[in-house]
Length: 335
Image (spheres, rainbow, N blue to C red):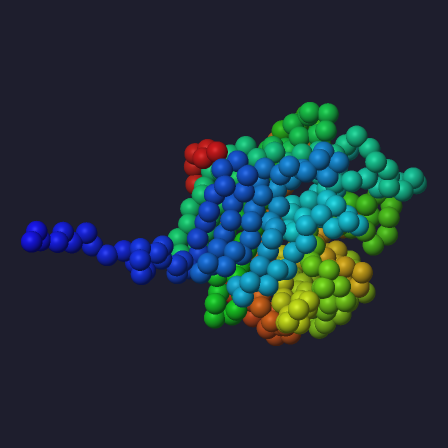
């Protein structure tokens, strides 16, 4: 009898693919990135969106899930179809709207104008993944609806899991360079005359079941009365339909931001939203050739977290700069 040839063993019975032991990055070419942790999808980052011009097409993170798999984001709710998970949404960039939908015009209210701009993905500078961390750096163009190139952006985000805290971290950075010939003022509906509407920034929309949730600040819990408040971080605790379990998101402002500690756009009654709002009630001007740079951290956690626990999540965010290495990588242009 001929001797058997030892072809070696593969991991898993019957040649099954081994399970993820930590973080993993998947790339759908020309569409999206997906980050998983031990097989659970944490989020999908859609970098080439397909939505209509009216919604100011832009990349977004959705669906967002906790380490335990609970969904903590909403996509195109019927009341505001331009709300998509977490997105870098700026509603008053000079005369352009990179938020979506109508623009608030002083003395006239909301008007649908021909000014819905686009954030266009150009290339990935960095796409790197280990079981401990995922690093992404992206180049984008901010183009007005009439075709004018207004800003080039280098956007970075890094992901790290913190299983000891029952949470994962999204470190986010944006550097927007004014490539036009004129100074551009960044603002919000409030800077245009509407009270308590200072939204414009890194905007999160939570699930419908999070309506009536609890807002958490360093000074204690609250609700809609915290609209426009100022502080280094803000959290939101909401409950899920079904099992009724809770999840917590905490947004942390970075001390390098020009407006630190930032004001917050937050709602908890009708629906769940958080937005660190650097242009809440004061315009910020960016001259030609200048760069607007802003950084944030987001912690997504299983369970209802109180003030002390949210503070611990923020402290972990500040322990290490996850973006340091990736943002200084030379431009390679991955696609």
